[in-house]
Image 1: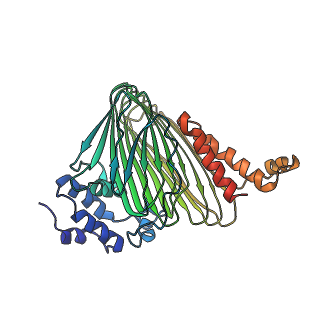
Image 2: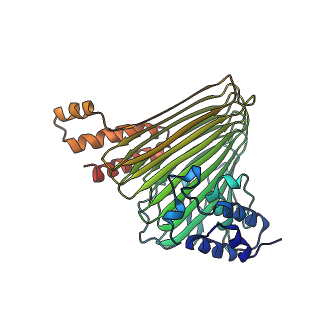
Image 3: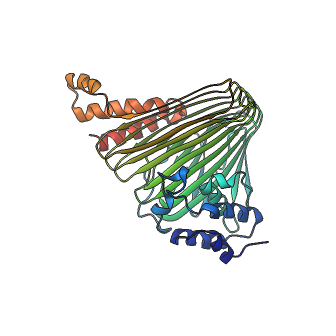
Length: 415
């Protein structure tokens, strides 16, 4: 039975103006049982807020007083496209490339698709419900059937829009390979991107992500990843934050001998907030996860890291996993919140985690100043070198552009 708008309002607890606006937008979309299911999952929590344990440092409900247009254009140019096939999502629609690399096919779904585990990702559920366009695309399915000859580049950008919601589902067939680049450069008051990876036996994906919003935007980037037998997934992200921004990755090793790398770096100036949250479930034996996240925060900026490895009893035997988070507080008034977690029930595993936060090493600063480097420049150079380690696995064609973006940020804010 299709729920009425009044029924949906009743499922929210004290809906705010932003949630009422989202309900109104939902009511304008075609009726669909899958859409209704995902919107109900979103309604269970509404916009995530600080009273939810997983969101206590990233309060979208408080940040989004209303769904309003951003006062700013996109905050930077997308990463260089080169010979990439570019898919661009904006508030007005989606732009698809005229030609695709060999090994990639696109399928446009106009009907809403189901989302497994929607209750665990409230903003992912919201995106799945609201990504549809009347008479147009709901979900873009990317099928990878071989080794893609060139990277695929997804861009989300706005032009002082109110919202920009997009959903992409990627199916990687056995032994296929994909190099995916994403540029999320802001320009909408509230933007949310949902991407799902279904990786089959021997499949490989290298994902490189740039996020940058303005101080009046809310941005969410949610990735759901399922790894098949011997598949490999590598993710590298650089985030500059927004008024509130969250990059969330939920990854499951579904079959044995799969390998995942989750690296990221955040740089936050005054008024900017960046949240890296990940949940990795080792649901198969002999799976491997490596994770390195680094951050640097200035006065008035906020960095958040939440990482969790879950290893169930029996099926998670011989797991090999390591999680590291390191942050620099460059000035008084900088804030970094971190919660690395290991939840292990199997007894034959190798799992470790580490978490540090502090200031730049005074001995290294002294060494550089003795060689005639001004203090501010020395601080910027040391910070750049610090975060660069987390970007080493980025796509070769855009890695230098990411380092340039970090370098430019540091030269403008630290010097």
